[in-house]
Length: 193
Image (cartoon, rainbow, N blue to C red; front, side, top):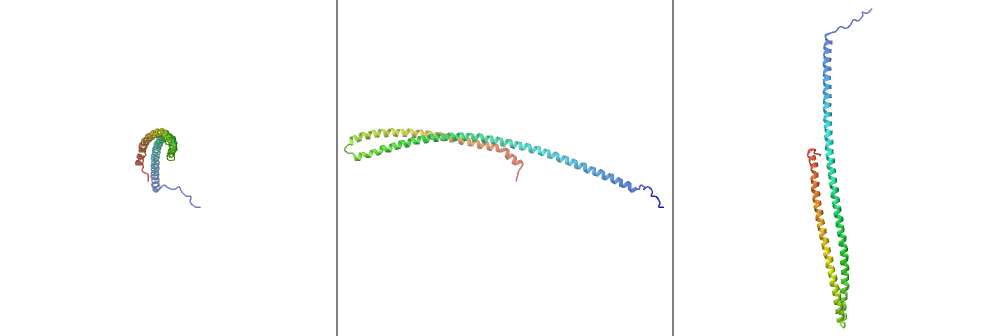
């Protein structure tokens, strides 16, 4: 019969192994705690970065909203000025039609003056008719002068309207330059390639 195996005896090697095991276990625990701490710090930093990014995006959205509101108000002003200018141009067109009609009447009256060469026998009668025609021409010239004066006034009104429009465009340029300051500051803070 074979001898029965006895209980294993504790050796000094087992104590050393157990001490090494405990040291390894505590080192592993320290490493795991350090990794957990590092992940916690990284997640905190990520949260703060996300919050800062959201705030920055909110500021950019607010700036874009203000810029759009400014542009829409300027576009409304420019459209009202353009409507005003269209009204002036329509008035000028009517005045020019009146001037054209007066010029046509003058051409007809000047054509009547050719009859003087053909009718020397009836010079007195023709001279009286010519005086009447000259009086009508004088009235037509007066009408043309008054129409040209009205056209001149309309052109002055257009000039002042265009001057106002130039001032509005200058104000819009300054406002856009002022609105672009936050974007330039952001570009300086976060330069993108």
